[in-house]
Image (cartoon, rainbow, N blue to C red; front, top):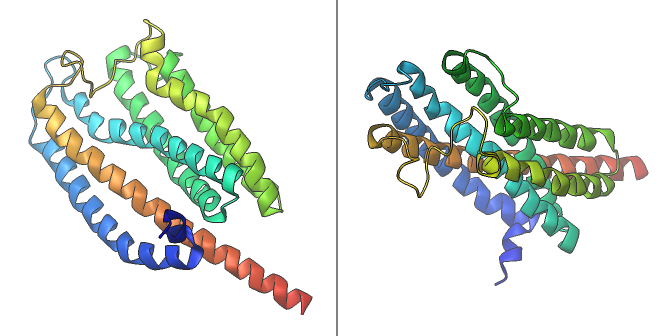
Length: 242
């Protein structure tokens, strides 16, 4: 059996209908445990004080913001190569989740940065590329709304996704590309010197896994909604023609 059979709209609706509740429950449990552990059972940082605890929202949301665009890139490439409608609907679904995660990351970053840097915003390489990524998200969603023909909209948004992927990469690796800027390096890294202390790292990983499952659940839910909307549109078109 080919993997593409699972992306058939009818089969997709079947297996995702069974998995979505599982992902929702697991995400709720892990996020609840991670945030409770992080906010109430970890000490204040010796440099950042209690403000360090915003990493339990900021880091997972920033990670999901970037990974959402990566998922959109893969789905858009599948559309360009195979013209598979479910893939492009999944990309559109991921964009709505991704723009929300990006906004959360920008807001929490500003809240974190104000006491640490003395300013709500700085034109730091990573912050700037992240802001541009947010604008690409808005442009992607606006382009879907502006074009009536769904296949034409899918083609143009897929091209936009390819271009925006540059800023998704910059958002992730800006600190490595430019050895300057206020933003710290990665909170989780293969380099032990860059990692946060274990007392913060462990609940952070739990929360990140929870955010990842939440992202998957939301994308599946939104994709299912897009499929239903496409079916409804097709039925309405048939009635008008009949």
